[in-house]
Image (tube, rainbow, N blue to C red; front, side):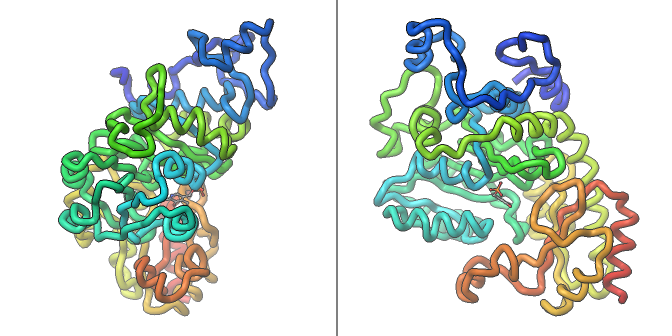
Length: 413
Ligand SMILES: Cc1ncc(COP(=O)(O)O)c(C=O)c1O
């Protein structure tokens, strides 16, 4: 990675191929197809025989999309980045590349609802088992792993539980057993956390959140740090790869992603590349407001519990201080007395919006139990650790004093 600082790296990075008009921002290439001068050159492009790969068809690659991937690469230091249509497409494409009938995924049950459902129901139909463990217990992780474990997966920070797995410690267990670590870091972007240093081999991000630049669009990214030897994976052993791509990225890019077809849209890539340029600026502001609000909420009588890993009351404070640069993001949770109190409070809010997303410019609130997890059975909700008196707040760019006032008036009414 270059020695330049985070925002400078992203803003000063030039395109792989100069734009013909010298455009300073990569234009939106909305076209589906790309023309070649002759049969030899189109064949060379399809057979990966060119020195700098040409674009052939937008489902496969596109200049605007490639520009976003380049910005993510310089921001994160990943060897390879692939962007796709959503965060869920990033998770499903990743597991479709490494899982096989008879394989298993070791993970916490404390997952984003659709990820839980993907593992528990969708992949299960294809013979992939999910093994839920307590990620705070390294022995449980070690004993869940066997020769068919295709990955250890976790979210950092868990949403909405606000837990942090000790990745450097877990990484030691995984390395000894040749199991890759895959981490969904949607909740904490690259300026706040270095996933590779913490031991992640593959990082997954819903770019819908911090990256999109204010909830402009849906997207996802898969980052390959090139740190895992994929010949340990029974499915990838036979990948006959060429070039610099790892077996994983080769499988993902050359087969899985193009067959699944959940490609990132070039308009989205344009907006998210702009979002990347202001990422650090926005992150610093929203995460500092989040910390201030977390402390403020802790001082309110009607608030039972606050979840924010920088608070001294958090059991994850030490690991949070160890892993994160600055404040640990803009998501926090808090509990009121009951579900009814949560509803009453939410309905009285004025500045804070009732909506499901994270890291919009606007502050958003949601009651996870009745929405994101609303269709799961009570037993499943118990397994997933979802409580009905919990609210999730994603802090935006409004003045923090106005947010405090909004909370106070809604609690007091
Ligand atoms: C931690 C986490 N991972 C993945 C996703 C899915 O992202 P997307 O909505 O872009 O598919 C979300 C969505 O909220 C999330 O919070």
